[in-house]
Image 1 (cartoon, rainbow, N blue to C red):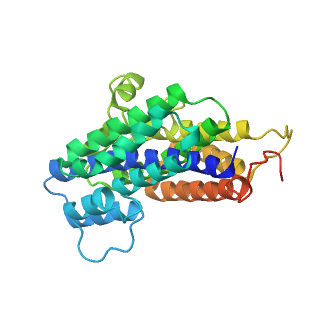
Image 2 (image 1 turned 90 degrees about the horizontal axis):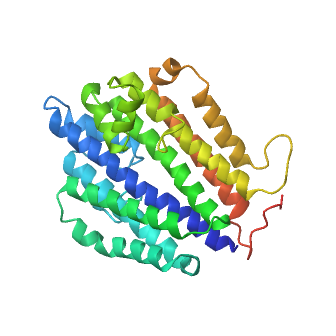
Length: 305
């Protein structure tokens, strides 16, 4: 596989997941701002911008600010519009490997973004999530389970860990957990699964546990880290019997075990700090993947050290 194709597929997975999850986070935050009349809007919006990695904003942020920077602004790297544009550009570079259906779904979503910006925020977020689910379904049904598929899923899984960590940080920082956690579960599409798992018990600790540790729910952090590790293992053919064949595999495995085998009380005691640490691990793993696989050579050599 060409190195540029592998890199494009990796980033298609990341950018589409980023757009989807940013819509989910904004949906949570805007609902909290509406449902809690006593909330400090400026403080809440400032915390959200920090969690999302927007650090160069001057002034007092409000609801309009976060919608501009995280939804509509094409120049903001964390915005929904920017992420969909980047996914479309990566798709254009990998056009020969994508099915016509997948290319058309991504391109149609990108072309519809200007009109989507005229929707009410909640309707726009729902539209973005629907389009992302549509593209994911097309990928599931049209992509061969070869190296390209593994790179696509690897990118999506790493981004899902990172964005779920941001979502958990947002919920933990919200002043009213009785509002934030049910809304967060719904944003992840996890509310019904959570109620079935915990037999109708609604509590912030159980909600955090479900989104962090549930091995069967595909958006939980442990499940997504497991999927990323599986993709990296499938991409390696060294047959190494001890240790780790790549630095990225070691980083992701360490992050997973640190979350999976520590007492839950230790993690939720300072959840935003723990999620920031997890985001750094994802960033380091992504850098390692880039260094190993996305070189400037014409083809990828899976066994090259």
